[in-house]
Length: 167
Image 1 (tube, rainbow, N blue to C red):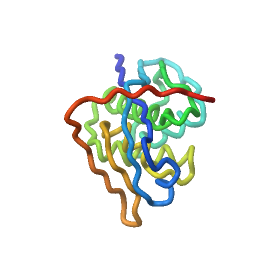
Image 2 (image 1 turned 30 degrees about the vertical axis):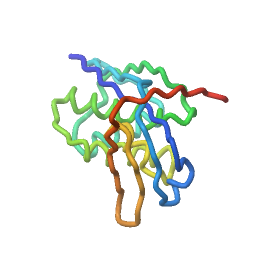
Image 3 (image 1 turned 90 degrees about the vertical axis):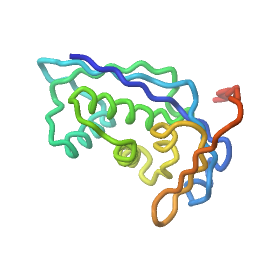
Image 4 (image 1 turned 30 degrees about the horizontal axis):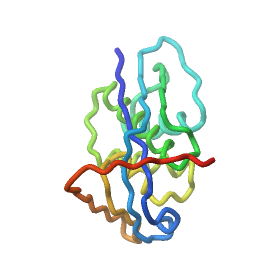
C-alpha cells in the first residue's frame, strides 16, 4: 500500500515578528510546497528527530505502531527560508499517516497535531505556520491568551506574488 499527501508553504504579508507576541498577522498559502509518500516496509526505517517526533505524536493520538513504514519526501521549499517548511512537512506527513492507516481526521485536529510538532522545532510557535498550511488561503491570524483567531479573506480576483529568497 502507498499514499501520498501534499502541503503548501506560506508567506507572511504583514506582522511577521509581531504575531509571536499576540498581534495579528496577514498570511497566505503559496503554490510552493512538498509531498510525503508512505509505503509498507518489512523492517524499521531510521528517521531524523523531527520525523520521529511527528510519528510519536501520531502514534500517541491513534495508538498505532508506525515503525514499519517508509517515508519519502519531495520538496520545492528550502528549509529555514521562512516559508513554513517544518509545518508543511508535519502536515503532509500527518495527512499521509491518517490516509495510510485509514483514520479520519478533521482540519482542527490536524492543526493541533501540527502545532504540537512545531513546538518541537520552535518551542513557542505562534501557530501562524500550522494555520496557513492546514487551512490554506489568505487569513488574518492572531494568537490570544484563549486560543487562536482566524479570519479567511475572500478576494474578488486572484493575486500573483513574486517572492525572492535573499539569503
